[in-house]
Amino acid sequence: MNNKNRKIMTYTDAIKQNPWIRLMRLDKPIGVYLLLWPTYWGLWFASNGQPSLKNFLIFTAGVLVMRAAGCVINDYADRHVDGQVERTKTRPLPAGEIKPQQALWLCFGLLLVALCLVLMTNQLTIMLSFVGAVVTAIYPLMKRFTNLPQLGLGVAFAWAVPMAFAAERAALPTELWLIFAAIVVWTVAFDTYYAMVDREDDLEIGVRSTAVLFGKYDLLMIVLLQVATLVIMALVGLEFQRGLVYFLSLVVAAGYFFNQFRRAKQRDREACFAAFLNNHRVGMVIFIGIAADYLIAQQPMAAYF
View 1 (tube, rainbow, N blue to C red):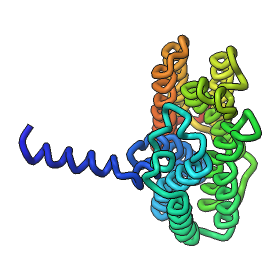
View 2 (tube, rainbow, N blue to C red):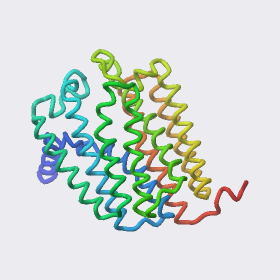
View 3 (cartoon, rainbow, N blue to C red):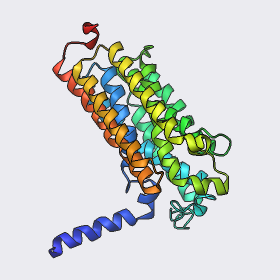
């Protein structure tokens, strides 16, 4: 390795180790992907495959900003328990690298940027954005009083769908809620894998999750949720009269789900985390199916019935 490449790697590592970057999880883009893909699902369905460049850029930037804000507020809420969990004890707040008040100011700044972005849309989208901000703020607190915090995360992730329809159509048609439901169910499934990584620590400190709730039935519940996701997305395809390419993407997604189960069936922490990460590919392949299907305008599947 030459000196130039070594300097680039050193600079990159320094950025990743910056506590502010780590607080916003900009060093771990998986959360961006898991929010970005379903946001694009909503945009493409709302616009019949032709979202405006303006909305595409606004929603892409909005995902980056709101995901960062969500991570900051989550870490602020969990600052007293993260130090007791193996996976999170080195985060900037429990490690003392950033003060809680500083984290709050950062969150406020990120929300201000998000507000500036949404103000470039329409009135309905702006109104919906305030609901989304409330849901984002409530989610970190849910693990204190319910075993279903993953449901709150699902609603927070899926809220991009009504906002996308509002931005593209200035209306909220009934069929968008099918997409919304699919994203909520899918999120509960993949975040249960994530919660399985921390389950032993969570049980010791009293933090609640679906992994704790499901217990020995965790993998069964994940499979059922994933099947429900595929069924709902198939209904979405019929409702929006999508073609063969779209439905093939659901078949590929099913293959990824099966591979996740196969990896995690021993409930090893690293395997469960790998299964969680694999959902990035699920979101991506479904988006590719949606975009490609609209692009080539294949014969609607409903015509075959």
